[in-house]
Figure 1 (cartoon, protein in one colour):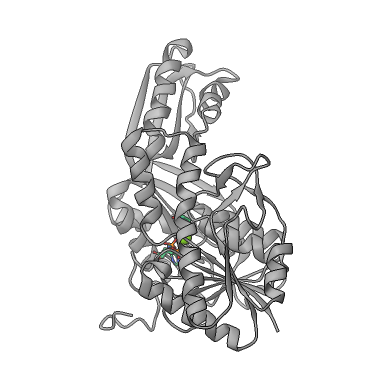
Figure 2: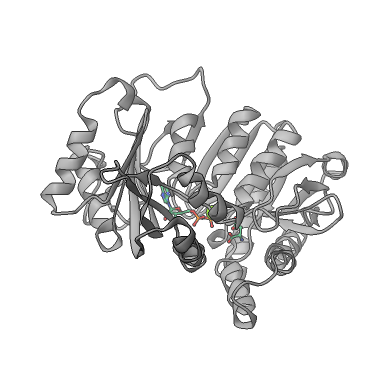
Length: 414
Ligand code: ADP
Ligand code: ASP
Ligand code: MG
C-alpha cells in the first residue's frame, strides 16, 4: 500500500462536474488500496476574481488582508470535493492550511513553508479517510493566514509529500505533462516522458507555469518523486527525475520557456563609480520589487546606463523610485518600455555543445526579431524582446532546435 499526494489544479476542479470527475478518479485510487492525500486549488478563475474585487477597493491592498481574501478560494474547493467523495461512500475530511499546521514565514502573498505537522493527517488516514487539504495557504507564527504566491498549490502538494514521506507526488493538470514548451503556444510541442530536476527548475524559474518553482525546489531538496499528469486523460505524464537517474541521452535543449508581462527600465547617464548599481537596485528591492535581468553597459564618458526588468504590474512603482533617484544620482534620464517579454532556451546538454547561442540568435534574426538584452548561464540562454514577437520567437526557436513532436498529427486536435 502506497501513500500518494495528488494535487488537482484550478481547471481540474473548475466546475461541479469536474469536481465530481475528480472524486470518481480518487475513488478509483482508493479501490486499489492506496492512502490518498489530495491538495486542491481554487476553482479556475476564482483567485483572479478575488484579486479584482480587492483592486476595485484600492490599487495596493494590504498584503495581510489579500491573504485572508485569497485563501477563501481553496476553502470552497476542499469542502465541495469532500462532499463529492462522501456522496460516493468514500470517507473524506477537508482541512485548511492552518488546520493541518502548514507553518510559513510571515511574508504575505509569497510565504515560504517552514514546517508541516503531519499528525492530524496521519490520524485521518489511519481511520481510512481521504484527506483533502487546501493548497496555496498556511499560517505564520502568529496565526495570520499566509499564501504562497501564484501557483502555490503545487508547493503545498510537494511539501506535504515531503513531510508525510509519501511514495509519490502527482500533479494533475489540464495538459498531459511537461512539454518542450507551452503546448498552447506551439501546437506540436512534444510531451516529455522525463525531465531532469535541474532543467525543470530552470524552466519553472523562467516562466513555464506548469509547476511553481518552489515546488520543484522542494522536490529536489527532499527527494520527492514528482510526476505531472493530466486530470482528463490517462497516461504516464512526465517524471521529474532526480540526480542519479539521468536519461540515457540528454538532448541539447530540453525546452523553451517564456515570460510575458515584463517591463524594462533604464536609468541613463549615472556616474561610473563604485556603489552606483547598489544605489539603484537597493531601493528597488527594499520596496519588495523583484528584479529579473540586470545589465550595465560599458562606460565611455564616465557614465553608465543601468537597465533592468520587472513584472509589468510593478513598473510604475519602480519608475517612481528611479524618478526620485534621478536628481541625487545626476542621471540623464529614466526610460521605460512597458511591453517586453523574455524567451529562454534551457538544457543541461548545452554545457557540452558550442554554437547554441549562435543558432538561437540566427533563428531570431531570420524572423527580424530584435534582441534587447541577452543573459546566459551554463544551462540556459535568455533574451528580452518586444512582447509582440514573443510567441513568434518561441515557435521559431522550437523549430530551429527541432523540438517538435515527429508524430504530431495536424488534423487531430488532441
Ligand atoms: P493548474 O491550474 O493545474 O495548476 P496551470 O495553468 O498553473 O495549471 O499550469 C498548466 C499550464 O501550464 C498548461 O495549461 C500550459 O498552458 C502551461 N505551460 C507552460 N509551459 C508548459 C510546459 N513546458 N509544459 C506543459 N505546460 C506548460
Ligand atoms: N489558486 C492559486 C492561484 O490561482 C494557487 C494555485 O492555483 O496553485 O494562483
Ligand atoms: Mg498551477
